[in-house]
Amino acid sequence: MGSEEHCELPQSNLSDREALAAMKKYKNVAVVGLSSNPEKPSHYVAKYLKEHGWNIFPVNPTLKGEVLGEKVYASLSDVPVNVEIVEIFRPPSEALPVVKDAIERGSKVVWMQVGIVNNEAAKLARAAGLTVVMDKCMMALHQRSAQ
Image 1 (cartoon, rainbow, N blue to C red):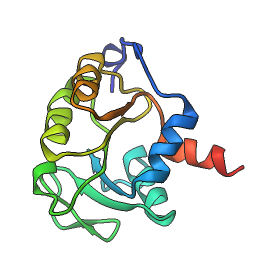
Image 2: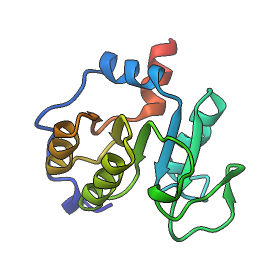
Image 3: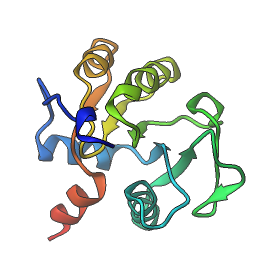
């Protein structure tokens, strides 16, 4: 992600405490943009979440088979279970269609990882009743809360 992608600041965002409460409440997480490369944040964050009790559902149209022992889905709409948290590891410019899919699916939380801010997508999600977290890492937040 180039610097031109990260030019927005969140107009509104949850506190760490509120974001952590959402994490504790829901356990099914679609990881949109999950990479098969263990060095990429989307991979090691998803691995961490899986190791700490979350059910992860990899979403990546360019991957086939499994990642982290889980079937990879081409799109959010292909995931056959109720996905409560949609964690976005895509550039900010690609967040809006993911948010629209999350709304359509009836997801509860849209979580944009560190460096991902899209206020238009966040406003749409909030208007549909979803909890929105931007520019925060689920793994780092969970690790800090465990200390």
